[in-house]
Length: 283
Length: 215
Image (cartoon, rainbow over all chains, first blue to last red; front, side):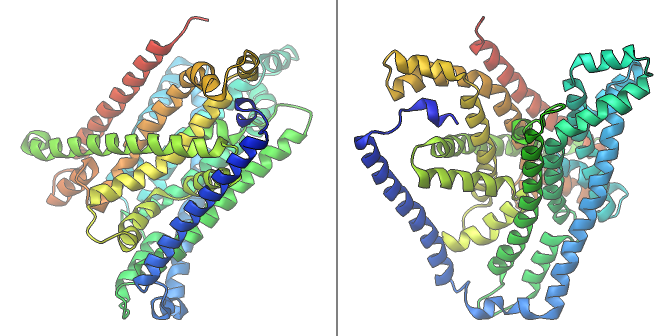
């Protein structure tokens, strides 16, 4: 914690000052939340008739279908990106220069492109929305996962490789039995963090009219007319909560694995997902 | 028929749109990110909780959802008729600020403990320690990740195109709807993005060189 070195343990005067800041800060944050809630209430967004739509079986079904569609795209893209990532990482670590160059070119190209542009091109050229989304997510996240795998393999201490070769193992044996198990172990939190990114990015399907959760929500909201107008606010609140809950659950899994790995004394220590994923996740 | 030459005005409009959108959101995200980072390391618990919640929530929210909140919910809270550009900037800025905050925090954490301890034992005050010892060293480690974040921001700004902001993706969509060959459009749009991202990475490399010290 950086706070520990930046300032002394507070004395009586500083404690009093901190207490004033705490009260002022809490008041400011509560005032902000109250402002948001009151404004929304003032516009009648919390009135019963705005939320009635969630009681209809048809609308519940639509949202459920959207959720299933999101999870389906995520599952396929997750598996696809892990497989592609493994292949590209193997390519980048290859001893043959040509293979290395091709893999590097592919990884750099797809990482430099905005994912939305890629998905839209796939959609506008040949693919159905579902496959455009899955393929785009697979290509982009596969390239990011390849970099994660590669970093993991490179982080295994050199002595491990040397010892394996000295025991007479072949190149593929060294990779499969010595390097990859340790690399996956140390990189698991980062790999899962990247899966959170994949899950978040399934929402881009909204833009190419793939009927995932956001799209279903928007359709429901724009097809329902209540006394207070279109119920966009209730729908965004419900759908947003579902999305954030899913992503938080997956992030929590990554953190749990990281903490669990740190407890053990043997082998390589998992790299905290925060360190490199901070940048990767923004993409 | 050349897509680029026939529609040069459209491309230029989109290119400038992306650059302006990225630049304004970048400034917002850096300012917000610094404020939130200050909250996260402050000795005042409520502010620390606020910073943690801000970062955790925004990092686990899809950007498209954030755009929907900006477009459908924000006008209800504030007032109707906010321009789409402003809404897009606030969505992009808030989203990126969470990542900027984490980059800044890990930058400050990367300064060895002994540095701050030495400064404190020389009798420096809190602000002197921060200004003369910690921040100058933290800046150097923070610059590369901030550069990558700005590149990610440029790529993320494409989402604004489908929420009525005139930028590169919006033009790609428009030209494709007019009936131009999508692959031809794609080449030029991709090239435009590469120009912007290369410019950003060159800028940050320059900054890195300027600030580098021989140890």
